[in-house]
Length: 176
Image (cartoon, rainbow, N blue to C red; front, top):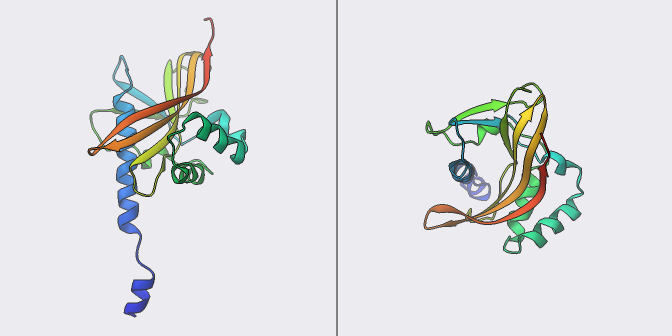
């Protein structure tokens, strides 16, 4: 019986550490957002938005070329974690300083601004992370006048997540 336990160790500590790291990264991203009313409308499911259509091979090459510092393991983990959408509330920080409102943009056409996140990809040591963030503004009846989609590469240095690099994937600026 002891041999079986040693052969198949539980992964609960690893899962707990990963969840903590995800919450820390999302906290860092939210803390870097500038919001005028203190409300953070966040799309209720993780998403890659328009990027869902990309092939994984082309997708990986694009990210690796645009973020030369990214480790292969971080990128592979990112791809694995974004094979399907997840409820983002399960990964957001539990921090009362952010007034987060989970939304579905298709049902909330009166929103003037919102953002969406992918799941986060990590290296095995949980010291490098990559996430895709979409940010929309100037929205009226489902049409937005401004939007961006960026991959953000973060590094954990001295216990804090630091934004290391951005990869601008798309940018929308339309007249109102």
